[in-house]
Image (tube, rainbow, N blue to C red; front, side, top):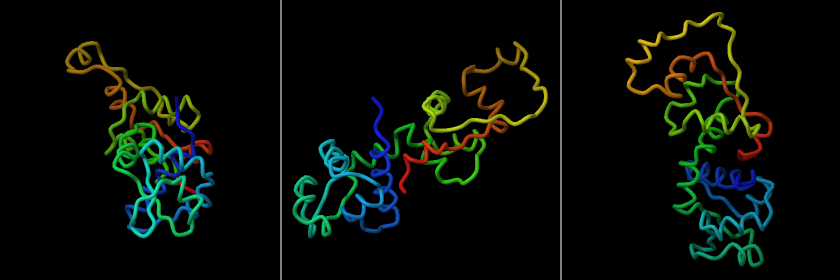
Length: 178
């Protein structure tokens, strides 16, 4: 089952703030990420985030009722792992760093994603894929294919990675922090 956009917005916002070493208050996350208390409680119950008041850990459910303006939210180790290793999030997060479409080859740089991950995001309507008009492309001969140790999607990426452009759709941008 796929996770809702709010799930990824909150986790990515906390991840971004961790990278900037800034604090993330519960009320600010609720407002900025258009999240509800139940969204945060579900993330806490999944051990992806935790809350603290005065450096003391507290369940998000209690923090929402007690002192939401003083409560800081944090990514747990499990939450950091989910943000950085989920293939769909890697695709969306990387594309979110660019205002314009990028080469498919660039999307693969520094990410642990496959062609199937990219096509899955495309089928979900979260990214767009366009192919530049480059005229006719010479197909490799069967001998060239036989000389390759691995003939799979990676070879297709090698052949076409520079002419295929990918970008987030409006629906895909909804998965990134506001």
